[in-house]
Image (cartoon, rainbow, N blue to C red; front, top):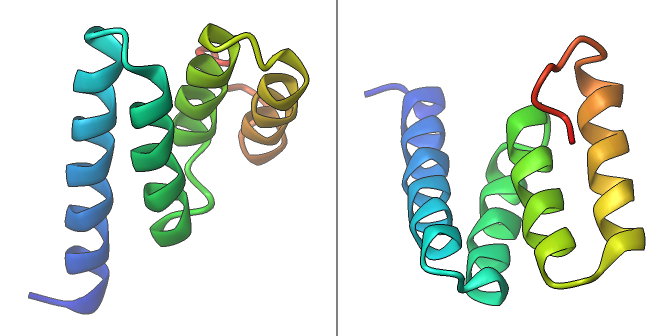
Length: 82
């Protein structure tokens, strides 16, 4: 397996764990996984959006807006950006 594939697989595992925690309403815990995934893959607009959603759910609106803007900066046509 190439290094890039390993990195992408690790990021996907972190994102899946974060998504499950969001489904369970555990936004603080989900945020930890999304932040770890962003270290591995900082240019994923969907991941920035997911982090923004978790922050918004925690009432951390200013931080959420920063994440949503980062998502749009990476991919201006990102239809999922909240």
